[in-house]
Image 1 (spheres, rainbow, N blue to C red):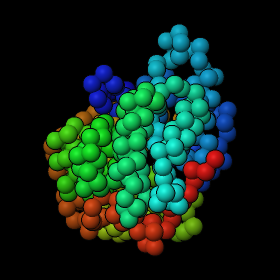
Image 2 (image 1 turned 90 degrees about the horizontal axis):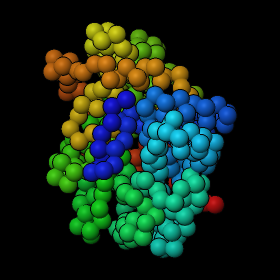
Image 3 (image 1 turned 135 degrees about the vertical axis):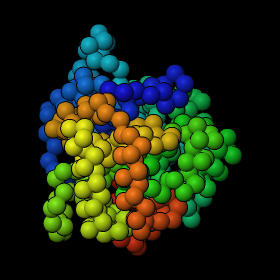
Length: 347
């Protein structure tokens, strides 16, 4: 599996195993099966795992995985893990958040994961009307200097706020963003900032919760309630993109390209983003190892300029999503924001 230096001396697998799907809301999870699946991913070269303090039970699950296969990690049979977690303070805490609160949550992540230092902590903030995000970012950088955190990243911030953090002296090693055939908001002005300060993207939503796959080609528009939270989220993105018919045209275009390389629509959607400027990796939310063989095929082909032109022809007809990155999702009363869970970080 292809790897990349996210920062000098720190390499990750370009396909990152997502953890949100293990947090509930995506079906029942067998702990035994989940731990065995993690081992299969690492053996396949996907050694970088994404999780969060608010993904219920996921940090603990990865901690159990590390402990269960400790001997294999020590012997070198399993390659070293890179664990990317997040710090997502509860909405109700944003107005009063103190450094002690941040220390408590970071210490809890260390304990859950069973590590002495967190590889990457990706900082998120629900609402800019509470300006403590800048102060909190500085607190995280202080924890980095103390040795509890190796690298600091951000997730779901807009360009303006990232610049504010950089101006405050906060070192930002990565930026987790939604980026896909259906969502190009980061290209508006964030990529220029990323290139100037070398802040690679770690991309989620690349297969739109599974919508960008052969399963939905020529399939009728699914009727709510959807079977999991990902489909609920990304069906809204399809509407922003231009609706279900234009989405089907996009799938047909991706399918015509996929057939040339004997891969699926999802692999072409992934490769399209992996070939974008400043993309360090893509986060694929895998509940199990069913798609592992398909992910291995990502190293077997490269999209040509002709392929990219075909995809861009569809993208150019999209209506959105528009606005600064993550602005739509920040509106708690809007259709994107109203499906979020804002207070999941309580002990």
